Image (cartoon, rainbow, N blue to C red; front, side):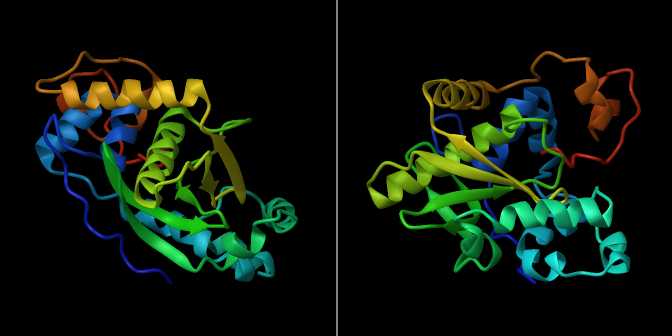
Length: 231
């Protein structure tokens, strides 16, 4: 099983921003503000267990129902195996299933952080989410993080990296993020937002607050739950 992620600390306003801060800032700037104050950057254990599924695809593909029911997946065994069968038909299945480069620290011009995998030739980065995918594509904060990883890899390799991958291993789903004009604009917007935080941003008071461990101290009228699995 893969080891823990290397530590990547936060930054000042004019320095490189971590992938984690960028993703959290794209999701909710106020949440990032509280996480910085608490010096809380590590995912909860349940999130780590789900991320580790991305390094077990071959064994999960052949796993019995009982093993899959005990694994931290969100689908019934038959549905999960069906999704993994679809993954197996991808051209990059071998790299996804047995990546040669894992937990790779990437440092770019504006951002740095961990790509859970770097796959393919030419290489593209993969970001693994412990959460659930939308019906199509990826959530905005995952897309921003994927663009950041692609840009950092491009900076290191001095070549364009036109896409990245986001894996949702609890569902056996992998989505491609193309570095379109819109995706890069969302990345730049998140980067400006994160660098500008020097006090508590406005509250959002919406569905995001229900899954936020800082909702109590933030002042939103929701329960405080440690369930940031979509980050």
